[in-house]
Image (cartoon, rainbow, N blue to C red; front, side, top):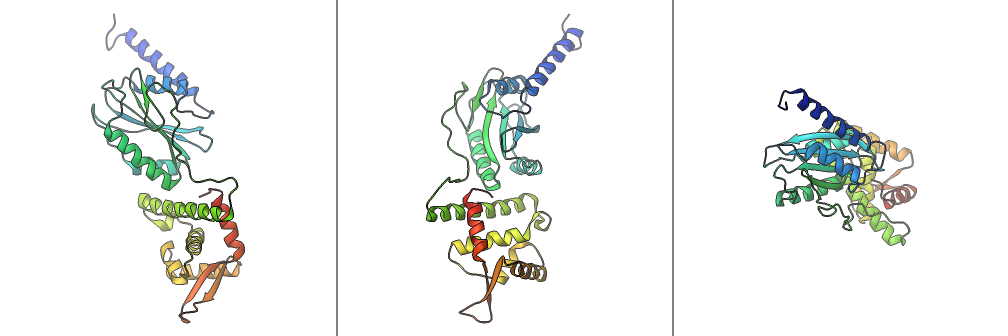
Length: 287
């Protein structure tokens, strides 16, 4: 006799759970391809028949290996609220380089809604600023999987648009400087977004590095930066920030100059060697 409390039902449930566990085990210690049949089987088996909408996030390292597989949110039959702060806070906690978002459509239609597409674009933009790549967003049902970022329902890859930073191999010097400036700006935006996510910049900041980024951006744009203007954004008391600037000058990383227009004002610049090192660093795409 088969019923909700029968031994047969319990055995079937256990068999299904073991099947899901086996599919999950196949994903460990390998690079995760969002189009891999093994991933598709796992997602459909674990989420396709759920009666309500759930959001699963696969957190990946730089080689797209699985760091964590977590269900972060769930909703109703027809609606699921996505909270970017929750997703990216967890990504930063895990030091994840990429994400695969997965949610189910209990209706049985894997076609993404306008809300699904809008949420994907928003999360992609936030992820770019934090250097956490949105590898894919997959909608699953009991029988199908639709790739919002990369393709179609049948699991065929569709020449995805790049979601990566500008990362040149060999470029002319002017192009290298442009790329370095673009990536430095991304690093600065990432800092601001991180502060918006967590608040308390004094707990998560690296004042020396933040100063170097700000100086690099200003010099690349042909702008001077006063010592006071350099000190204000880093989240330290002004006296502590001024001492830090002096230490960087003493170490030969920064140079303090008298403002040629206003002799009462000091400007700060990177030493040439520091400039070239940062240009090479950001030109390689590292933020």
